Image (tube, rainbow, N blue to C red; front, side, top):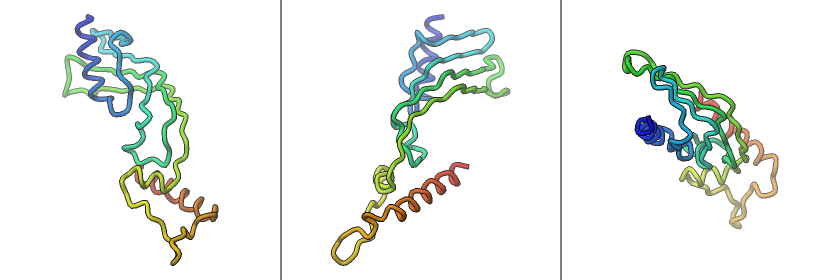
Length: 142
C-alpha cells in the first residue's frame, strides 16, 4: 500500500503542483477498494492565484479537505469526483499597477508633460480603476 500511496502522491503533485504545496505520501489516506483519496490541510502556494490574474495576492491559504472519488475499474467511463471542503484564504488586494506588472503587461501610467502621474494622489480614480479591474476579472472567470 505504501508504494501505491507514493505513486499516487507523485501523480497528485503533478496535477496540483501549480496551486498546492507538496503532497506528502505519509498524509495521504487511501481506501483503494472504494476509490477514496483524502487529503487534509493542504497548503496553497503563495502564487496559486497568479494564473487566474486575480486582483489579489495570496498571503496564506489552506484547503481543509480535498477528497477524490476515483472509479478505478471504470476510469474513462465514469467521472473522477473532486470534493473540496473548507478553503481558508488570507489575501491582500493588489494595486492595479502591481497586478499589471505581475502579469507582464505595460505598467506605464498616463502622465502630464512634466512626466508626473496624473493619478497620483487621486484616490477616487485609483479606486475606480481597481473596481473595474476586479469586475473584469470576475467577468472573465465566469
